[in-house]
Amino acid sequence: MNKLFRLTAISSVCMLLVAPASNAFGIGLLEAYQAALKNDPNHKVAKAELIAGKEYETIGRSGLLPSLQYSYSTSKNKGESISPNFIGQLTTSNQDYTSESKGVTLRQTLFNLDAYARFQQGVAQTNLSDAQFDMRNSDLFIRLLSAYSDAKFAEDQIGLYSAQRDTLAEQRRVNDRLFAKGEGTKTDMLETQARLDIAEAMLLEANDALQTARNTLSGIIGMDATQLDGLNSEFKAIPMVGDFQEWKTTAEKSNPELSAARYSLEIAEKEIDKSRAGHAPRIDLNASYNHGLSETFSTRNQDLNMRTIGVQLVIPIYSGGYVNAVSKQAVARRERARAELEATSSKVMIELRKQFNAVNSGAIKIDGLQRAVNSATLLVEATGQSVKGGIRINADLLNAQQQLITAKRDLASARYNYLLSFLKLRVAAGTINIDDLRTVAGYFSVN
Image 1: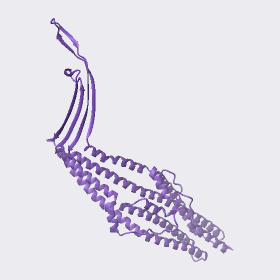
Image 2 (image 1 turned 90 degrees about the vertical axis):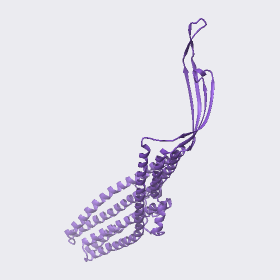
Image 3 (image 1 turned 180 degrees about the horizontal axis):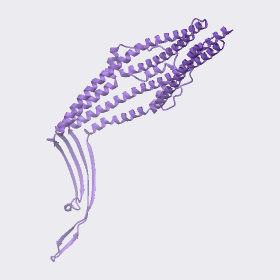
Image 4 (image 1 turned 180 degrees about the vertical axis):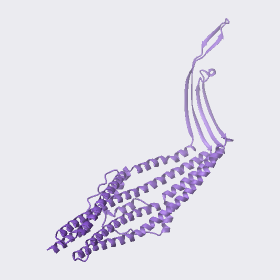
């Protein structure tokens, strides 16, 4: 009877650890992305900067387009004149009058290297803003999936550690009952209690990590993230398309960070053109129309209409060394921008290679860890049977249980990292879009 009780109790302990946990209805990854587009503060900043950045081209073009100005003025003038009358006496007469002037002035640049360089720089600055927005939009995919995965992984760990705690608590009760019946040992009780205390501590740590991860995700999507969809039990790797050289070629053309660095270099080059234009002549077409009424004392009560048109040539000769100084600064900044482009290119290619390898090796790693979980599951069951038969001891069962927990944790981590590397590879290549997120979202579902 005692042996039957021992077999039943140990079997119950093993089943507690092996049985999978269930998830409640959660927020899907695509739902989280739609919420992030509306609520993520960083994305709002990016959109505002994009709107502002698109005006650089218009600002630059304005220097090449005509400017039209209207002016109006009116004033009351008080005066007096002193003159002799017919008998030779000096008399004073009031000469107060109101003057008025209004006119329109048109100015059109005909030749201005500075204005043309500003226009080209404005185009480059607008393109830079577009590239920077693409960078931040890509970053949103990564930040969202990273936060979502962290929160879900923390939930997974709580499930594992809770199952481990419950298993150890049940095993401790089994040890206590076996010891009371004279079939167990004090050592078994102490070993199990020590593992139980560690499991309790790890569960507390996992709860703290979960709260932090949920807060991070909530900050991105702007809503509570207490329930998330879980990974599907069936996990198949995404087929890799193309070799690394193809991905590298795509990244060189499409990576937004590289594009931004190139536009920064172009902006720096146009800054040189702007600074050197300080010594170049400028030619403007000026036209005006002016209507005046009693503009001066001598033209009181007279209307005067004046129309003028002409060309103005300005040749800068000396500006105290300002033009030479800013030209040298611009050249130095161009060299800095060129060096930053090289550094960015190196960083992007390193990241591309890293994620390319991570995707390729990740699939193999997941398969290996899945086999490890299966083996560890069988090991727990076999060790339990061996303990029942007296071949193994309590410590062997504890070690087998810990090995299963570790394998499940590593498998879950590898799956999340694989999906994250899948998106990061496309970010590095500059090809990421909503379809890629849909592909990743397909790995999550309500369990």
